[in-house]
Image 1 (cartoon, rainbow, N blue to C red):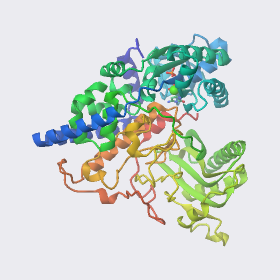
Image 2 (cartoon, rainbow, N blue to C red):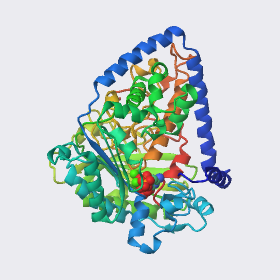
Image 3 (tube, rainbow, N blue to C red):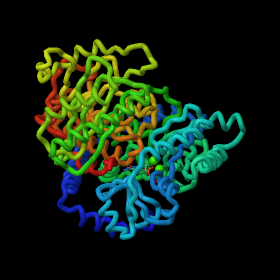
Image 4 (cartoon, rainbow, N blue to C red):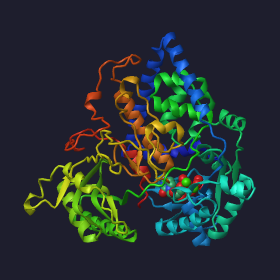
Length: 599
Ligand code: DCP
Ligand code: CA
Ligand code: CA
């Protein structure tokens, strides 16, 4: 965004979005953040000298521990395709070359070419605002099959350098190139050059790369010389510390707008290194996991081991459309979704048992409703039967988004039936299928718990999670491992006074299966890093608000609302949770508006 007249861009965005629901929500979010900041400031002011020296000691101990875990023996490379969708569209239609291009529609832009970015046009911006900023802006509708095809081509190249490469989105991957460097006695820089050349040869597209001793830093590095560039940070402690000494915290995956504002406005932290200078305060004000994360950022630490591969846990699709209450139109869209989902399941040879319907109302309220079927299904017809029942139960309503997800998957190639039977007991039964005379499925209104299984998430807004796993396809990492991982995109940096941290960590938000928010069930593919951060930030702000009333020796407020929060690591079976209609729901409109890429 260098060279962009930011003030002008902001003014246009402000003028054009003023009064919209999106705008109102942005304002709500801002107000919430402000409140959090005030609260943290008050907490900070209440710290006694004794408190501070206590936390200083704790912080120093923690930093020593973290330092001891530093591993400089691995070389990680992160690649990120340049203007991915836009570059592909230009490749397919060379007449677009050099033009300011937006992939998306008037309601939402998925990405913009670098020519368009000069005008301030960017991903997640409504197209009509893009037009205002850049009058000659050319629009192309997204073509996801195309993007998947090119993504596969890039992955074939990644495979040659690291068979266990970690793809975090269609256009991004982490490669452990330690072995390649050793075996061929070449440097990380040479590997990066070679790999980028190979990707260009195979796809005609350019990418950028970062090489560093850990994934967290490698990702930051891949952005430094973007587009079509690379940056190498040597495996040297001093080099890493120097690098982070001036690195703005916002560059770190996992530190979004809200976290950035809080750290800057409350503690005056704007670079990673300043985390270390304010270590005592970080430990005093934030939960242990969050403080560990902040300190590891300050030390330039990140994930170095390749996580175990995890199985795919669910498949989903969703569509955004102009809000409508026309039921025949809605059922038609549902049928399309069912067909899509069935196609995807069949392509992968999978069947599933739990079907979740996701709805976003015209007012941006998000609801999820799920059923668990007796047998595994993957046909359009079967899916549609259950999806229709779920949707009917919600009617009438006006919707702007519908999605279907199938989880509890069973691979047809794999005979070992998953322990589905036991899971059935814990679902409460649907009353509305009594008419069939037999229980062919169970409706679980909002939430499902599967003890000993980590693959299902609670979709209520109350933040219950059976066995917290930070997931993004990088392998299950428990929250306690947070400091050893760079799962920054996934980590909601949560503040949590001691009182809340002991038995449970309310509000800790994770990306289940790499894309499902553990708190509200919203799905965001791994490519949407910014949106993920924003989403995490949102929950962070929310949890802070809840914490305001938690009784803690460090907090100024006394009344604990914790009890209201069904927060437990051993979930209670047969627990009927409030539907989102009755309970509070999370006002994440803006976020949903921003990330809807299904145009
Ligand atoms: N994407 C999207 N909606 C967003 C962000 C991204 O649909 N809000 C899609 C379009 C992008 C692709 O994901 O082309 C990759 O996202 P990136 O954030 O990596 O952006 P680009 O690859 O487009 O550009 P850059 O060169 O900055 O990486
Ligand atoms: Ca990307
Ligand atoms: Ca990219």
